Length: 275
Image 1: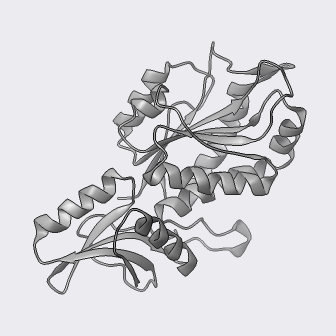
Image 2 (image 1 turned 180 degrees about the horizontal axis):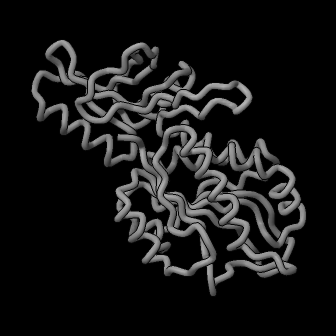
């Protein structure tokens, strides 16, 4: 079963979001969310949308849609604004709690948005936002520049493809997946996906995985698995040589596995990288 991401283009319908000189937030974020969703789908991710056209749903309804979709991650798209237009700029990511998978997604996406030209305003905890508080899976809310700042709008428009690709890459890197090959390579194969619990290890693929533990008792392995999943890590179990091996991620590039191992060690796990 493929990893699944719920994509939420903010606002919509009778709720335009922030508006600046006729430009509406709901339009910008729908275009961007659909572009990111397409890249994720091309990379083998299942994608569910809270909207694909100009309709309105309450934040609670959007959170419920995400929960009902069975997604592993919820990503809400927005653009920022200030009471005084042009007084702020840059991108930021809102999370319910700055830890686990949301923290990792936030920082990876911000790195990509910074490379596209946005100032990095950091990760901000917001415990009162419905789409972060009422979602049952890890969730992030992206503020992709200020719609009332002409310079941010210029970046949004001129670097749109890089922004969409960067957001998708930030998500994929965080959950242990690889971006789809560029269209001009002619490649049609989907990129590897992390195994789900108790699947056989992938054959004919050299993947780097971070192992957190190996257990003879199945229940002990699942206790560790559930702990990792609760903290937002894309964990799974491989049964091999009479051991239940609890691992995280399936990376084609060693540097991504090293980055994941560092994150796990920051949470106090004893780890090593395996293939």
